[in-house]
Image (tube, rainbow, N blue to C red; front, side):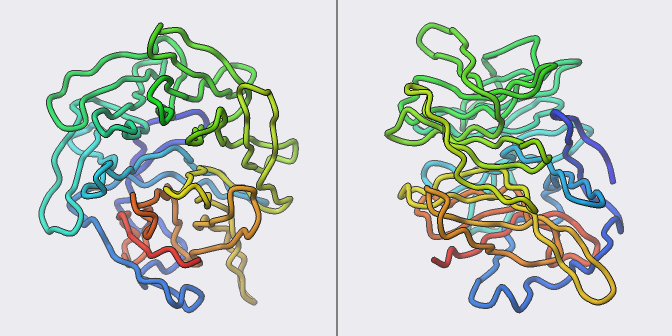
Amino acid sequence: MKKLFLCGLLCLSFITGNAQQVDYSVVSVPEESGIDFLQVTTTGDYVCMPTVKRRRNGLSWFSNRIIDISIQGTHIAYLSYRNEATNIFIKELGKQGGSVQRTNRKGILDFSYSPNGKFIVFSENRGTSHQIFQTDASNGYVCRQITSANQDYSPVYTSDMKQIFFARQEANGTSIWAYHVTNNFVSSYTSGMNPCPLKGESAFLCTRTNTEGKSEIWKINHETGIEECIVSDPSRSFTSPSISPDGQWILLTGESIISNENFIYRNTDIYACRTDGSELAQLTFHAADDLSPVWSRDGRYIYFISQRGSAEGTANIWRMNFLH
């Protein structure tokens, strides 16, 4: 397993050998009946796999966004490790063939499309810091630097394009900050990571870790100061919130347990719930780690990274239909 780069306490890796402890070779399991799974990438796309660290009483995993769908819904962007560097590549959905390299950097950590589809904002590991940049979504390699000399990652635009939210890791923890596009100011809001701005609201979702070490999903109104925990479980962690295009559902990565008479295996799976945290449901049950979920632009599908369908444990991007 080759380590690519660090982001906070976790890192991305590309699985190249028989690192798995379970059988990944099947595409789906009986608990996933009714779901159609489609493999989007191939081994030759060298998709980066978020690292999952297993402990006796829980899991931790890289929770930042490393795949995203173009605004038109026709292409998928993802992180790929090639030629000793990690970059953003873009693949046309529904067609065979290779991917187009979109950045020419060394160690990109995560990224997202801007709401108008014109830009990609990303963070990159540069020496001792993680810095945020912006580049054109379709042409050239020119990048504009947004932040510097800090540990910044998970950049994402607000729907009105006036701010870029991001997470900043400091000595006392990780917090949500915003870069104001019009005046280049940065401001700090609250503790958390994985910022997810809400359309039409002065609020965002984020991930926080409680005193027991479990990650929760919080809703933060950055105008009123109201903070509300909407997803929490004493035995499971949840990260990576993503709002559906219709604003009715939240997509999550969550902790799960596979067990039988012989063993207990902690796993990561895809979950969904209503925007108030109700109707929480586990969507995937495979022994492979399912991570980094994002919505299709019409909300009908979920794209995610998994080693399912590969006896060697190779990571690929998969698509599943959203049943609700």
